[in-house]
Each structure stands twice: as C-alpha cells, then as structure tokens.
Image (cartoon, rainbow, N blue to C red; front, side, top):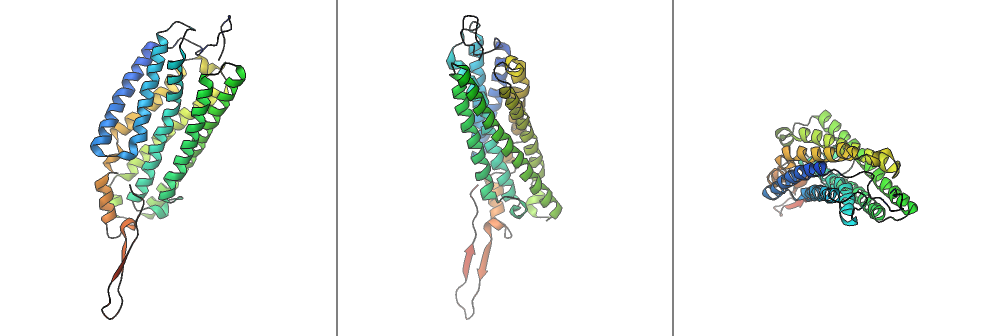
Length: 304
C-alpha cells in the first residue's frame, strides 16, 4: 500500500471503476445462476467448488463496486477485503472441480492404466495442492488487507505469490498428466464402446483451455504481486479486468456451454460400471469342481 501526503494508507492506487465492476457483477451472476441450475438439475455435485468460485467472483466485484462509490482515499476496509480475498481465491475453487473432471474421464473411459497417476490418487493429489494454494493465498490476502506497515505488506505479498506459484506448479503438472493420458489412450485405440460413444476427447480439450486460462491469470497475479504495491500492474485497474475478470468469466462460460454433465453423470457412470469388461465392475467368477458353489470377487472403484 502507498500513502497519502498525510501518511494515510491507500487501499487502491486508483479510484475503482463502478461501470467495470457492475458489468462483471452481472456477467458472473448470470453465469453462476446458470451453473447453480445445471448443478441441481443434473446432480453434478463434484461441480460444487466451481459454483462457489462463481459466487466468490460475483461478490468480489460487488466489493469493488461498493468502494467505487466512496471518496478517493476514504475507502472502507470491509468491501476492500471482500474483493481482495474472493477474487483472489475463486480460481482455486475452479481448479478443484477441473481436477475432479479429469479423474472421472479416466474412470469413464476405463483408461486408468494410461494415466501416470491412478484415478483415486489424482483427485487427492491435485486437490491437496489446490487446498495448500488456497490457504496460502487466503492467509496472505488477509495479512495484506489489514497491513499497516510496509513490512507486513511485503510479507502478505510474498505469501500470496508463493500460493500462486504452488497453483501454477500443480496446474502445470495437471496439464502434463492429462496430456500423457490423452496421448496414451488415443495411441492405444482400444475401441471401447464407452470411449467411442462419449465425446471425452472434446472435454479433455476443454480442460486444456480452462487450465491454460487459469494459468495465464495466475502468472499475471504472480508478476503483479511480485512487483509490489508500487508496481505498474497493481497501480493500473485495467489489468485486473483483462487478465483476471475476463479470463475467469471465459472459464465459467466455457463450462456453461460445455457442461461436464453431458458425459459425466449418474447414468453414464452407472452404464460404465455395469459394463461386463469395465474395470470398475469387473466380477470374476471362480468355479470349483464337484458342484461346489461359485464365489465372486468384485472390484469396486472410487465413487463418482
């Protein structure tokens, strides 16, 4: 934070734009309502973090709108903390659902042997990284929002930058994992009914696009906080709308238009588990001589 000539800390280096905030409040609200409808009508509970992320974005820009109505350098702390934390943290919630989509695609295509990480561990590993990133960013954002000295401001910036770096590292590893799985299963050309009848490759491409958009946003944020409070990026409001708001809105709209419930839903997964050659519902019958009873072994998989 910089200070006024009178020594008062400035929450912003510019006067927040009401028009820009309202535009994105409306955009994020419309997309979020759409996602809430899709969540409940299609029962895609693994998308709950994504929906919460959309609400975070909406409420975050409400905070910016509230501050925009206040006099320069007289901004109240509540709306500032609201916009600072919620806009910062929303992409981590988007990421959590994106990670879970990949694990379900792997199960749906019965392609676990083609994945570098077993499906049941994939979600745990990446969501754990996402939680770590979320906690680091939230603690750093909280410290930054209430900072009264340059030292505490710098510490908050560093923690946020570290959290964003963790997010970028895990996203990079996630894209690598998805790419390896995609390459291996495509090359194998197994010709399974599920893999052929469901457009899973289309949804892998969607995951690549969404992940890339979030990666770009996170790299922007790393540079932004790395420059410090006197940096050019934090001092210019345009950048947050170009490299954060717009990119995250595109991620939300992308999944409105290509909602994963089209391939990952209770019906498709039940059909997959019921398939005779499915790994998830494989039942091996052992027959013993002399009319003795048959015994079955059922291998179960992680619930969807």
